[in-house]
Image (cartoon, rainbow, N blue to C red):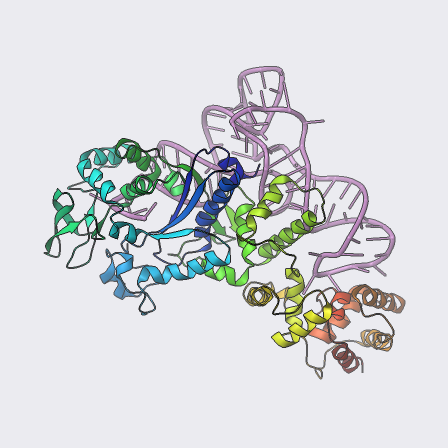
Amino acid sequence: MHWADAFASKLSGDQLVSTGISPSGHIHVGNMREILTGDMIYRASLDAGLKTRFIYLCDDMDPLRKVYPFLSDDYAKYVGKPLFSIPAPDGGSKPYSEYFLAPFLDVLKRVGVDVEVIRTRDLYAGGVFEEAIDMAMNNSSLIRDILEKVSGRKIEGEWSPYNPICSSCGRVNSTSVVSYERPFVKYWCKCGNEDTADIRKAEGKMPWRIEWPAKWFALGVTVEPFGKDHGAPGGSYDTGKMIAERIYKVKAPDYLIYERILLKGKGAMHSSTGNVIPAYEMTEFSPPEILRYLIARVHPNRHIDFDPGNGLLSLIDEFEGLFQSIKSGEPVEEDRKRSLDLSLPSGSLYEEKISFRHLVTLVQIYTTDQSLDISLKRSGVHDGISANGMADRIKVVREWISRYAPESMKFSLLPGSEKVAIDMSQKAILKEFLGKMDSIQWDSSTIHNEIHDIIGSAGLDPKTGFASFYMALIGKDKGPRLGYFLSNLEKDYVRKRLSECSS
RNA sequence: GGGUCCGUAGCUUAGUCAGGUAGAGCGAUGGACUCUUAAUCCAUAGGUCGGGGGUUCGAACCCCCUCGGACCCGCCA
């Protein structure tokens, strides 16, 4: 059974699947595992016949923790202030949190994740946490005990399960609570300000370890996937679970712990080290279903070594091959079939598309949209560039080639007059083919066989023989499979190049 | 120091919760056809299940130790 179904099969009753990512920097491919794991559980739960909702909580109340490497030094003055209240790095009018959230929401749309987006700030502003904060404030010392006991750390000095945002300096990390009388929290701030915060408004927040179980309680979360950092013993799930049970009298959600996505040869993705592929970039150079497939095909507890070059290409081959097998009715293991199901963006039925590899070749032959369109239509396999999603797919292919394709896969057609260095025997072969090309059928296997025969009867070794064509066309000694390659080229162009090079 | 997850064929991995002949895809090799940047079809090879010990009639699976990788044990999320 597929991991998502195995997980869903243990659930019963109505479900609320919750995910959350902090918009403190570019949301990257590693973070995508959180939301996609959630999405797959969500779908599996629905398929298991359970009434299920799926939410994504954007933690825009979190303070900026430090000046990240991608920020200018000016940001020092914003450390400690909530992300929704500080400016975005591009100097635009959007708040910091929305600046990083927006491209992520685009990605979700592209990969077909159907999720309710909730900003944590709105939960505070709407009074959703009023009860949770009140209960926490009334059980302050009990919570403190739990945190100390479960995490094994001593909490020094004064402490409160709710930190007001200073009404003067805007920081959430510099206030100290003086007194509490529902719904008002009196505080003073290191900046010298004294004021009162209303727990029904976005005037303060709970620290993460309390906020998390408060979300479970206030929203009724029943399922949550999270990274293994939260899952360690003494980690935030452990403390959250005990706070949920002891203070809020609710059951902690069922969970699924997922492993990290590593960049092949470079280690873990961290926005702080710059070793990172933002999620929106991934959808620029990979088809969306492949991003899902990357996550769907392996159990969450295995780490993924992501290789955007050849690795991505073979992942795409695997996906396309799997699709073909299913379509033609070959026997396919249940789990693999299910992985493919879960990789289809929501609401879309998978349709056969021109293979990625084929497009990699075509796009390099026909470098303008117009010529590519003509070629696609001529081939009869496709309605052209404007047909459903084709333009997007082509953009993706071009982007992949320029960013991640191995050099050996790149080529560009030489202009008609370019001279190349090949020897007499090679020229002879080109000449012979030139004489025959008008009388043979112009399809890949006929061309290939013809060339093969010519090379064979000339007594040349195939490698050298084939190389003469590649040299003439693209100036390299290797290229796409020759018969297939030629059949996709304009005949006039081929004639021109071969006669230029064989004389 | 304490803890968690992962290690199975060249690569990606299934199988571990409920012990019972280690499977698949890709790649490789050979052949059909001297065939590259997945042509196709057929066939073949490839594994001390990271290592050692234990429990058992029987261990990839359970227990202990150990090596390698990742991560946690922050009033950080």
